[in-house]
Length: 103
Image (cartoon, rainbow, N blue to C red):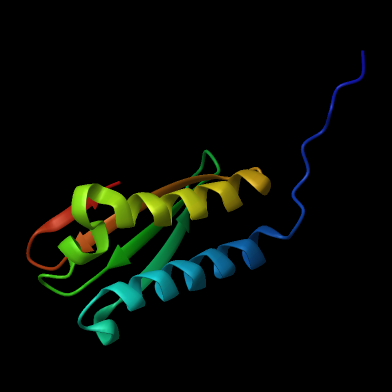
């Protein structure tokens, strides 16, 4: 039996930068203070890409949306793209003075 080898279709650095840009674009459209949107990425030892989104006070609710629809849609897009590149993705939202919310 032949074993299938997993390969990434793009270099991971390129994919990470594209994911950061995509998340920043989606979040900027939703918030009232787009200049306060910041996104960072880290790669864990296990190979999981962690995208962290910072938004202004009061904008977390806009990013999450009614019933979590906005964040779920953003997460679906990002996780689908990550799966195509054989990368596990975790999305976190940080609101100043409140802390971190894992989604």
